[in-house]
Amino acid sequence: MGQQAVNGLFLGSIYALFALGYTLVFGVLDILNLAHAAVFMLASFVALVLVSDLHLHLLLALPCTMALAGLLGLLLERVAFRPLRSRADSNVAGLISSLAAATVLEAVALEVFGPNVARFPFGTLPAGDPAHPLHLFGAVVSRLQLTIIGVAVILFLSLTFLVKRTRLGREVRAVAESPRAARVLGVNVDRAIAASFFISSALGGAAGVLYGLAFNSISPDMGRSVELKGLSVIIVGGMGSMPGAVLAGFALGLTEVFVVAHLGGSWRDAVSFAGLFLILVLRPHGLLGAVSPREA
Amino acid sequence: MGGLLSSLYETYQSTLAYTALNSLLALSVYTSLSCGQLALGSAGFAALGAYSAALLTLQAHWPFPLALAAGLAVPALLAVPLGLPVLRLRGVFLAIATVGFGEVVRLCLVNWEYVNGAQGIVAIPQKTAVWMIYLALGVVLFLLARLRGSKWGFALEAIREDEPAARSMGIPVARYKLSMLVLGAAMAGLAGALEAHFTFMVAPNGFTFGRVVDMLVFAVVGGARLYLGPVVGAAFLTLLPELLRELAPRVGIEAGPLRLMVNGLILLAVILFLPSGLVSLPGRLRAMRAARSPP
Picture 1: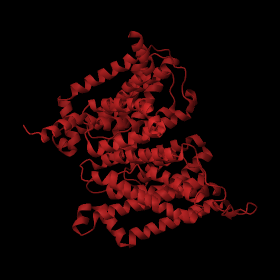
Picture 2: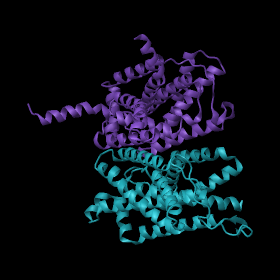
Picture 3: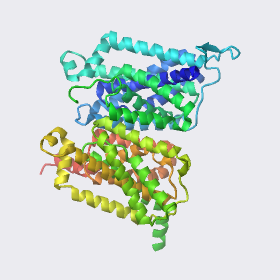
């Protein structure tokens, strides 16, 4: 029981990290960025190259990867989102152009890294002493799990600080509320949107690296497995709500672990999607989402 | 000459069939798009149609036309209880709810022992001939052509352009949306049933999220404002890989990544520069030429 809770939290922290980036862009632009999963996947490969070819320490490779993923996010915004922003159907058009971008990125990964599963070299993370595993509330916690949860928590806290306490964060929130009003008040809207893409992709990249570490398997189609789960996390949490995304991410991780333990592995995704479907029908604004007055 | 034609037909039979099947599937996404709704349940509907028809053929020995009719009717009937709650959602929420529905269908099939789970049903007798798929496509296109310019067609356009305005004009918006979802479900189910009896087998992994994304891409690349658009898009993107397979060795990129890359770039170019799809290309070119040489 305790062991499953630990495993669920560990998985959930990666989902939450991935979903945070997703929901950030949705909150600001009302656009689902389907290329987020492709950034997640490419970042994992980039970290692999940094660790195994350039022999960087993982804790150094992670911020480098996040910066590169953030730059990729800026590029995506420039190519696939900015030209569409003035269009009336920009949220469906944006969905499709992000899909196109995701396809191109996946093709690049497939051509550069090949279709096979790649792995981090042995000893990327110190494995700890196998004779004396760490115990926490009666559950065995591996060094890897501890690192991943730790990194995720640090990133949650820094994002919260960035969004709540800094000028940039206030600008991003203002644009999310109403781009026009923000522009009237002197906010540089283009810069705020670009910044949210950078942050979103950096977080997606971090999630990719951690996911690659957690399962020690990196492949061009790894984004597929989290793409839909990330969607269900941000829906369940309430579109655009960051605390909601974190909460729902952990909830999904825990649900998956418990379903696998009690119903069997093949029911894992079915239960998650059925839950998503029910939430959408019964409470379309998610657990923590606010009902905007114009839609109600 | 006849020999050459028949050997060409042998080689490209499956490409020909898939051109029409993909057109039907793209049209099933288009029906909802035509009233402004992004509903992505078509992979689930196609799965329901394919499995119903295949089971009826194999287990109950129903004649083929009846099995096809059931493959069309089962998803259409299921679309009603699905659509009633789900169509209240808007924009991407509707898209995600319907994707969720499709995934639940697929994952239930994976877990259903009676239909062999993930392996699917095999050894379905091949009863679909290519002409049948084209006949089905023809009937669907005829229906959609009749819709255009009718009272019904105008109502759909009004809903697509401005839903609150349409509602205030007294158009029963919910009923039109539901009808289009049901129509799309029937088309997807028919396509699934035809496909199952063409390829000898059905398996859950033929109805993934990726498949419904393909259908959406066909519709958008061809043009989602006119019923011919999805057909043009599906035909173009189904024939393209055949071309690329010939081209791949010459550019030194493997066929798989090249196909993905070209698909992605075409989609990006269309959405950025040609928002009404490939079908609007001739009109755009004519307008450009007219602008360059004034009479």
